[in-house]
Length: 163
Image (cartoon, rainbow, N blue to C red):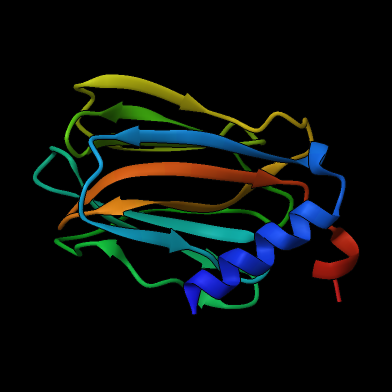
């Protein structure tokens, strides 16, 4: 089902002006099973679990019309969460990686951020190429905890989401 949602999204992007879609290449050690965190509408919240102030243990997104996605990785302890306001979008993801994703920083267009994990390993910084684009979904690899991620950015058609 997720594969179909990703395929539909990518097809819609291909048919639209592709200058509004961009892709941030994969970071992390990789390995395991592929995943895609996809939902309907805009992202309205993100939850991240970390392992004892160490690497990222799991994460999930809440979407405007489809609610919370399944967790990528594991749930352990209390999640750190960022709820987005109606006019707020995720416009940047930074962090560190080695074999696993060590840390994540989600940054919004309003200057707020969620920082989780231990900042050790290789740095990465992801952002869209179009100034009005926002994070639409993540994909990557998981072997227990997430081992790799890549970001997909697009301009959301407000006529489609504001029904």
